[in-house]
Amino acid sequence: KDGVWQIQIPAKYRVGHEAHFGQVTENFLQYLKDGKLPEWEVPNMIKDGTAESNIMKLTGHKSSQCFARYNRMTIEENARALSGTGFLS
Image (tube, rainbow, N blue to C red):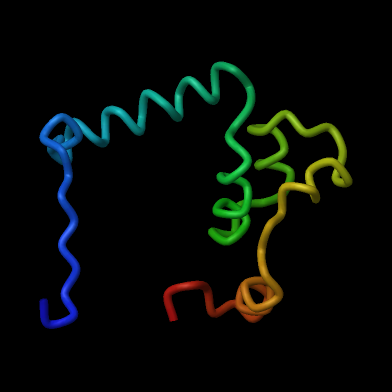
């Protein structure tokens, strides 16, 4: 109605902020324990300006060539990162 979307979220998926933060933290710590972050996290860390060497330590990549396969940034995202304006401008 009036171009407004409404999304119904089942009650079992509704958790408060603190509980959700705990879930995210548990998942992240498990990734660290396993020595492998999910593929989708690499581009996010690159966008945030995390050094490639630090990301490689977290992901377990041994070579820059292997690591480069996980860089899914678009040309525009790369240009913004290189210009120093970040992604919030």
